[in-house]
Image (cartoon, rainbow, N blue to C red; front, side, top):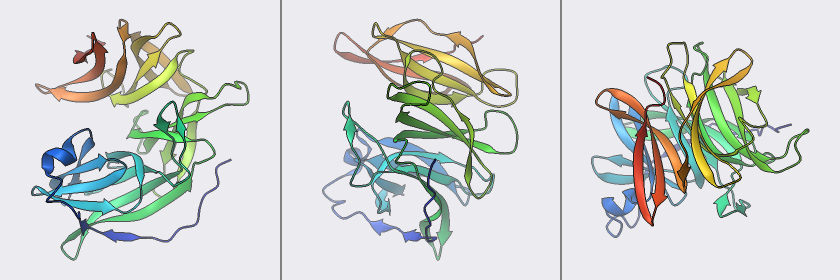
Length: 275
């Protein structure tokens, strides 16, 4: 059972990134995770670099939150004018498993302008440290009015004693997260990464899953929500040394982009999966 922490609503005012003259824009954007947030109808780049969160305002880099962050997702979970920032916090007791850090709290910030300053106001925090979260994402998988928040966790279950990556889904009701589907796995393969995409003629987004089998082969599978769980729609060909997947827009059409390595070189490939 997760223990919900009490917390104070905290408004964090941006602090100019000290050392910005030494770390130019290319340094900040190199090997970082970047997402776009809309705040008062203006788009800003939110940057996660070395477990620190920044915002790019007219090519000036500001620190957005003081807390150490493992992963983030920008998503309008409340269907309001401004996006929210969903993160996995990384406390000092974060541990390494196979060189991947595991987080502690799931935190939601409201992004808004207060007195001409962009702020991240904490509106929700829950302790997830007992189930060891490692990634966070969001989408509406069933077409209702509530956002589903995906949290990748690393744990054993009642029926499966092996510690492994597992897919947990939560619904956001405007005030808190509550469990929607906390499955043991999508399949018997190892869960590596997840992204969401709207490919089928149905309400809600599908879940694209990067998985690895026992022979070291990677596949991307598309799963669709069906009232009580997921069904597999299609599976890609095999890849080797795949690292991640993402949803990208190319020529007004959405694709799944897979990144992988071959013969020591890095490659990207667009997957359509369905006609």
